Length: 290
Length: 276
Image (cartoon, rainbow over all chains, first blue to last red; front, side, top):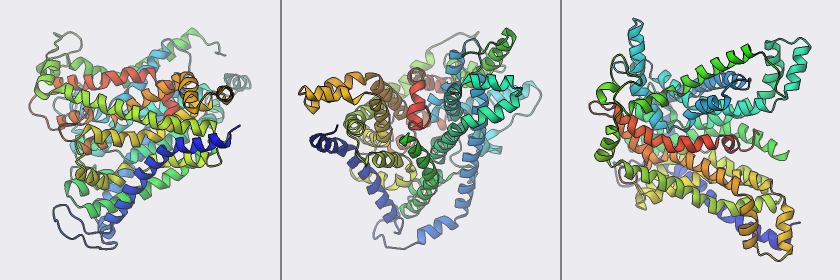
């Protein structure tokens, strides 16, 4: 068992990680909170007077904020819907006996490893471009008008791209869960006369429930922070049509140089992410005991 | 046990799965093919598939015009550098939590995880200003620091789950035989944990290589890794599909290969052990 000496050694060895993360969390967080109550614009040097909640009122009453919240919810919700439903389907499919299962798996997982800027630009130019894109060519081939994805439906197009990136993640995790399902259970159900729908509804779905929750929570954390895909495709536009909360804060602070308002937006983003994080942490924490 | 199913059913599964798999993979395949076309072939109507004069011209052009390999090298230095520093900090921490657990261990693990949930945009402004004042903007060193810190919780967690599987008695036996703490970790623990450490390393290199919030916001030209370099293609001039494809292919190929090797560990690393 652990001795007194090893206890103190353990504390010394864990200290660097804890101190670094503590600093990484507390210092910027304290500064964000501090900046958020100042009138602080990088273009207007001089005194940065205390203004209380003025930045928050400004940020929260800005029509762009309402748009950004709606877009954030649509983006997160849309991608979750596509990836979770698609992931469940693919996981069940890939769990069936077939030839070349390993290769199919590799093909399906691949998009997850493509860096966000590459996937966004490849989709935007080589597929969704209304003149030279592959989709435009396909539309013309069947006699339809090419669709100008980013002009007509910028947010939906981004949802499509991001779903392509995250579908592999959902599939991989749900497949892992599926593979731990005892196939004898399915066989027994089949012998008792349970049809495919009943087997899915009463055996597979409950078995995957936990993994589905994990997928939803982890993806939500990442999807709330989607940034690169918006930056290289639409730059948040047209207008605010594809601006999410992350992009709005970036625009306030690094494009309009309004540190005060940007910081207030940052605090709002932290509060929203924490609501999701609490649920996720509770689930992971429960698992740690077993 | 695999259930006995009819060959017809198996053939049907295979056909559906391969069709979907190829559709999902198609954008990557198309990028790869386009990178070997001329710019005119890249936008040809109807599209050309395999029967074109394969050329490597785009790869040389991308390198000549924009010094591609500098950005590639930045990506390598930043992702490998941050991973190695992260491992050096995390291995002792994971050792101490796995083999000398206290009543705080669980809380510390959960707290570390919570730092990962902080949305980056919430701390963008202060980090940007601190970097500006310390002259760390657009430096490899600055990005290594940030990526080390954002991936540290994942590294600690993954190592912790791997170390947990090693029986503590072996380490104790070494201690009884008079091994110092340093040799206990270096000569007993690390050799046994090599597979776990390797997959932790692989996953973190992948995550750091593809990180596209801090790399885009904290670099300009000098230290820009591939994520930021590729982003410069968002305001193109003239025909550029073939060149974009060549740059993209080189940017994703190494990580795609590493990713395929680490797909099993991916689940473990990204769900923090919540799905096994």
